[in-house]
Length: 56
Image (cartoon, rainbow, N blue to C red):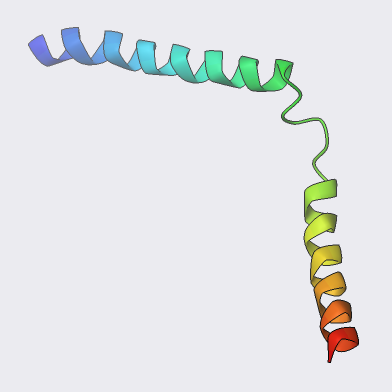
């Protein structure tokens, strides 16, 4: 029973912390553009191969 008196407030604190971090991330625009980073990775690979061919 004593463990529950510690674990319940601790879990509520951790859940509140994650909620606060999530709200902060959404307000700062962290989740606005989800497609560009994936496309940028593909374009960087393409550009690196192209530069390697030109430099040889």
